[in-house]
Image (tube, rainbow over all chains, first blue to last red; front, side):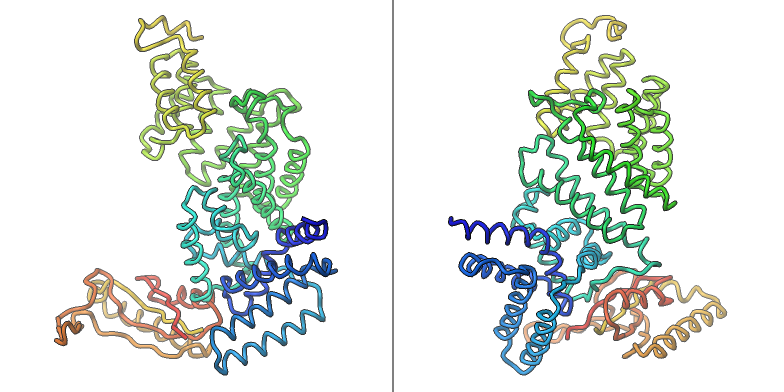
Length: 427
Length: 114
């Protein structure tokens, strides 16, 4: 590859990352046909890679790509239908082309595009993949591998959703003040889902998943930039930054799993934590509490030991109370019980967890069995701890976590084959 | 874009209403239809007779099979429709959610092929 090739490639890549969603939103604004917009854009990128190395990169690469993609759209229209209608449409588009050449500034309609992707009429499960594809330009194979779905299946589900946007007439529009609170949640949930998929690859071995967390953080920052006065938007951004700040600390130098309580605060990314704390302060000044702000505040209370040497458990319990009132989620109740254990002891927490045992949603929830095992071990109930560790190990997806739990189990003063020693020796 | 709002409801409900309640319900539909007309989005509307009056027809091997009753034998039946012309799905949803039928049944919003 010559240096001009490399420069063309790197410019095209930079434009792709920064502008893909902007260009898709603009190209599909009139027709709502995001599929056609993507096709035209990918052809435009291909022409860029063919001509930029020869003629040099244009001064305004974004504008160049937009113009090229618009021409492709016109060609597409002509190919599809040679009748009068297509000619009229082509004229319309050509008018738009002239306008865009005159005005090189490209309006940012990415947020409107995200609202279309997270529209209530779109299946919730496909909203995050759709945003990743249409706003960031990730391909179906990459999204599929991150969401553990076969690329062809992901491709089909994505194209079905895109066709729904067009045929159902889903608008590209940021909802007004009145509707916004009801609609922003779906956008934030989709960004959070994308992040969670990436976060579940703690070793960062799976490139598709590791990058996904970064892409989601990029999206969260983008939404925060475009809606700077929405408290929950800032809350989500803060939550993702807190989580990302501790990514590396989840593994030690040997690749072993390190639980939060054992992580050294010096292994956390201080500047990300500072950024998260600043966002959270801005959010709380807006006086509109919500799930993401509470979760970010919880992260903040956990990392308080950076300064005080100890997590603020009282604050953690209070925050979980608020989150539980808001969501009624058994997972929140479980985490609250673990915080209670730090203040009132393991026996009190076990009692709370016993009450949760009736909820069948927790039967196969790995953290539930880890909590049971750890708390049982702390109260000296080694046989119960042993059984709970077995279940937790069986439910763990991550080999490093499995090894960690096997180590904890082996440290119990109990083995089902040998005669059990006194439970007191667990302490 | 044109959308068909299809009003599905449990047909067992209507006969149990008192005359006053029926009058109230009819009034709500009249007001809604008037609102659609004033906004100049109404393209057509009808109330259907109960599904007991329905007949189903299907031709197999050149023979018309005629059956008594509606196509789908479900608790909620199509009871009427509004055809509206609005800019996008959000506008259609907004009209659908204001329809009296949305409070005692379900409304399916379908874009018309164009």
